[in-house]
Length: 307
Image (cartoon, rainbow, N blue to C red; front, side, top):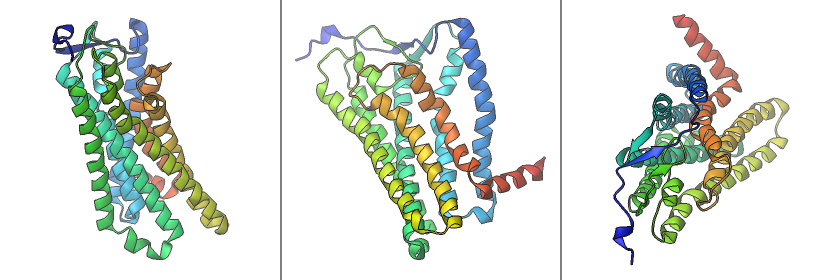
């Protein structure tokens, strides 16, 4: 039985941030601000282009618009607080804000992983069952699939949130990072939490590893199928599949590095976390766009119309 005198009620956490050096913090602030000023409007432009061009009405572009929207939401969870903290001498976050950050980070992150699986399904049907594509991937089914990704992400996030709020926390209430996450809170637990840690790992690490393996297998099968196609069709579909594989790798790679081991400290965790929560999410839709002539042409038309 746990001794309740050994832990206290935590009302806030102190974040150590990315660096304690003021000059380094200002350089990082300018870099991230410039990055957001360029990439964030780019993602909004992708959504507006797909919504405004009737020629981009296929399910693939519908899913891409949803991916861009998810990435914008995901990249709004931790960076605003991080940018504001660059000007704070002592970086603090309340317990409730920490829990909210944790929930939305995993809710949106899981929803994106599930959406990538839906996009893999779309490409599988388009390549392997082209005659049945309009029946298997119509607008109604697309909406159901996207709704399922949000629902799955919500279940994932609320499960981790429920496990986290029941962790008995001890001092010091210091988190060696720029945001709140489950594995950091587990380190502050002052009781044997092996069952909770195991449940968190199964709900987090195992989920992302399984998604990554299934996605790699599916795209490997698709690329093997392409060898039987004509050169023109092969090049077009292969370009799309390669874009998907790049996005899957840059999203799942850092996540597996951070969450793949059950709550063990990993070297360079802060650096990997920056790419995982700030850089990669906003660049994912851009990777698709830069390899797709149709959407690039439509974006140029939209920009030229107003400028």
